Length: 169
Image 1 (tube, rainbow, N blue to C red):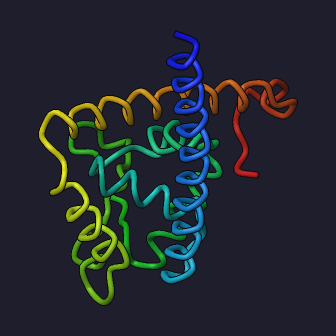
Image 2: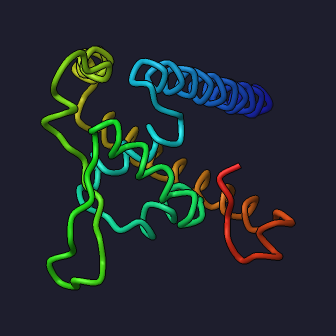
């Protein structure tokens, strides 16, 4: 029984360390990809949201990235100048503007995400369906925890309490 507890504790510790290493490697990759495209890391994260969700409002983008709408306006400006996103009128409300990725522009040239995507496809091919379902569940829950903890930190910032908004910096 004590051995089982020690084995479990060691495995949980290993998961924690691996999670931290994965987060670090992902952040380093995002920085390298951003530099490759001449964008900032926040810009790349915004672009990722656009690719994943399609058209979104600036407010939705701000919420997803924990930024003010003012900071997101700068992000959107940079993405549109770079030609990887565009503003479009909201078909349901002419007062609103939506932001969407320019998938054709993203497909041109070297797409740094294709190679890593293929590598992960090969990795996933080695797992059974139930393993992939478990991994998907674990990642979804991990993302939710991280999102909630990020929101908690953002909401606790002194500048957030005074202004009611989140800054980019």
